[in-house]
Image 1 (cartoon, rainbow, N blue to C red):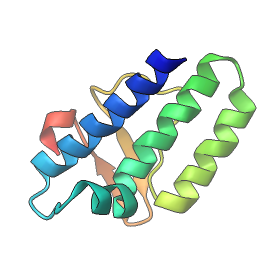
Image 2 (cartoon, rainbow, N blue to C red):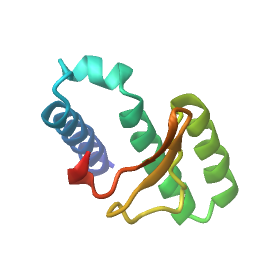
Image 3 (cartoon, rainbow, N blue to C red):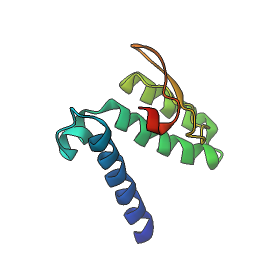
Length: 102
């Protein structure tokens, strides 16, 4: 259990560092964790994906739709290939390509 908690904290730190490194407007980790909807969408997607893999597909879809409603970003819960993530935001369609292109 402790190793899983360390893994989650490590992943969150990595995500925050990635946002800081790739967004010139990013000012600090606390601000990014609170206001960046892209981070929120990715974090919630990870929860949805675990649910999907445990065969809780209905619950995963409902949570993914709540995530889409709250963040404006749609990532299907069964999605595990990050090479090409396509999402629809309420601001229009976007194709992220691979993670290095953002």
